[in-house]
Length: 115
Image (cartoon, rainbow, N blue to C red; front, side, top):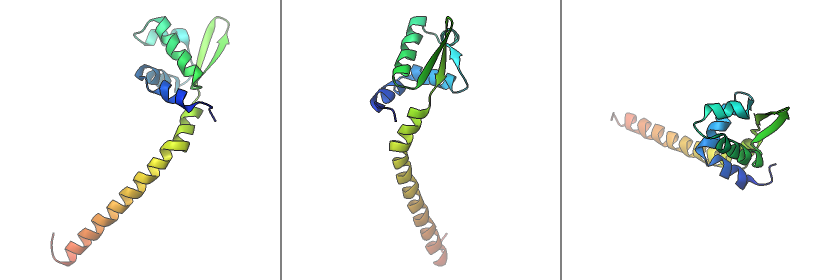
């Protein structure tokens, strides 16, 4: 488990960093390639990548002069399993209850001859 999920949340809070992760989910990119895809300076892209790396969301491998960036989705999965999935269960149960109430009401109205 990632030691500091607060760092993951902080990294995910920025839309540019989320777009970088979206780009990396299709496969690894070099830092240079990523810099050409964003309307930011090279320094800004590298700063965002460093934050993602510290949060454990990006793994960097150096091959010669190139830095290859890989998505590490494990921290996102940990957030989902440890926190978000609990809320998903709540909403699923609530929606199921609502569905049953609506179906019961429709059934009752049909028996009474109402539409």
